[in-house]
Length: 350
Image (cartoon, rainbow, N blue to C red; front, side, top):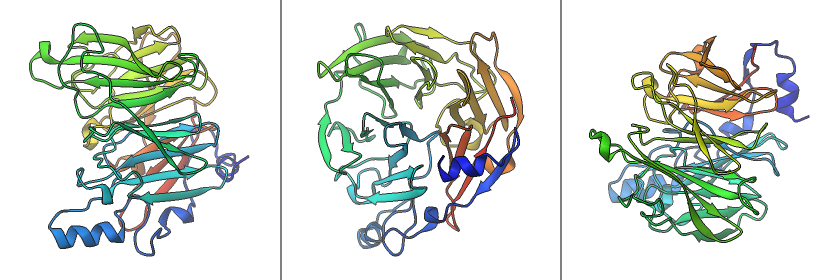
């Protein structure tokens, strides 16, 4: 068991507690803590009249690499500045947070859900994405060849430019060597211009493959994409309480089906009222969303006709700078605070 598992074992069902994570607030460069711009980035920003901002916003969950039991998130602003881009990670086995500044040499932007992990690699799509999808080897820390972006016309019948906020997820069960999932929607006030497109990069053939295309499926360009630990499926899409849209399930055949719509938020969008942190029940195939708008937990058991209200969120989680880490006991949450970030453990009571 990891230190986090051991700590969570003391929680009663439904329990929630602050988890002591001293490395979370250690200065990685002698000055800056995890999620914060490096001292070098701050100095460059001051000298050249731009603003260096912490990376811990516009996110919903950290990507998990099961092989190394590590969690990952990337981003940084000003989005055009490579020096401010951070790659933050949590190693469950070492019980340690790390932050690698200027890690890719490329620009970036808001985190969105544009970090994925799997097969010993981390993938990140900058919102300034002309350089392709960045790839880093987890074991060595080496940057690998970037994955080229899919053509705008990869999904037949659609050719508009991609929206900047793409959700990525690594799916080990889709394709002979796995696939990198790409979920993208053009946000528009005109329904016919809301193009939702899903594609996958097939590692065996090194080619992009069309998965799904549709108009006015999702209205929010800030998507989620999360693979299940219990079945060869992935949860994709976005929804808000104000504009309830059905999330989708992608299976191992590449088929997309839709779930019942619900009154909760499922998006890494920026404000409290539209944010929802997404993970899965530790014991079974059941999606769980910590919704900051309704300030409740919601879940959808497999085959259920509707989302279930699972009770109020702890007040400590109602913050736009909070993200979830799916764990073997339930979920951990990390919350960035300039005065000192915090980590929490939660065990479902259902």
